[in-house]
Amino acid sequence: MSNSIIIGQYVPGDSWIHRLDPRIKIVIIFCFVVFVFFANTALSYGWLTLFAIATAASTKIKARFIAKGLTPVWFLIIFTFVLHLIVTREGTVLFEVFTFPIYSGALIQGFSISLRFFLLILVTSLLTLTTTPIEITDAIESLLHPLKKIKFPVHELALMMSISLRFIPTLMQETEKISKAQASRGVDFKTGPLKDRIQAVVPLLVPLFVSAFKRAEDLAMAMEARGYRGGEGRSKLRELVIRKQDIIALGLFAFVIVVLFLLRS
Image: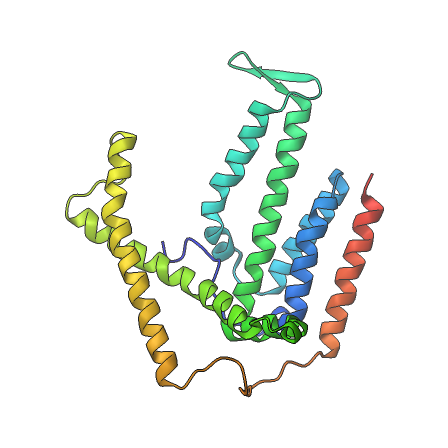
């Protein structure tokens, strides 16, 4: 289970995606999340898919590792597609499945929504795969720096988001250990009525929450022991600097967006 989800995991590397300024990566991903909803033709979706796959390949992370990490997402993607087939009643009837009509509009809408969901998960996952939690914290703090003028706790918010992303893989590993321990004691999570499965999850959730609170307490004590008092007066070992490759990356992404709008209907 520890390798079945890639959100929050960092994979060390020396690709040009790894070397990009984390602020540039966050801006590009945020813009991609917005502009992916502007695609409305097969060519525009294909263009965004090409961009996402090319970006993932540029990270030099094994495709098998990324595909395995996206395995839990496929259930939601397929569920979204099937749900649109059932609910949507637009267009003409193409064929029937067990006397249930499948409309052309249902296929188009279900495929487009599912593809959007896949692209969003893939591209946003590349941020944590190629950026360390410290870099994400510094980037968020730098981008939100203007909010400090209104006394907004920018540093604390950035640190909280970074720690949350970092602990996702840790909690998944803890869940795997607890589930194996419960299974060795005879707890069955996969068979039986739905009511029994829900009841079997309770022995899994209780120690998981206890472990999570214990880790949070240990982390807070460790930060206090090292003299952490917030972001005021803190210096940084590595200062974020916009370089030539970051400007090129922004230019390439701007080109992708321009082509996207040209391919729209």
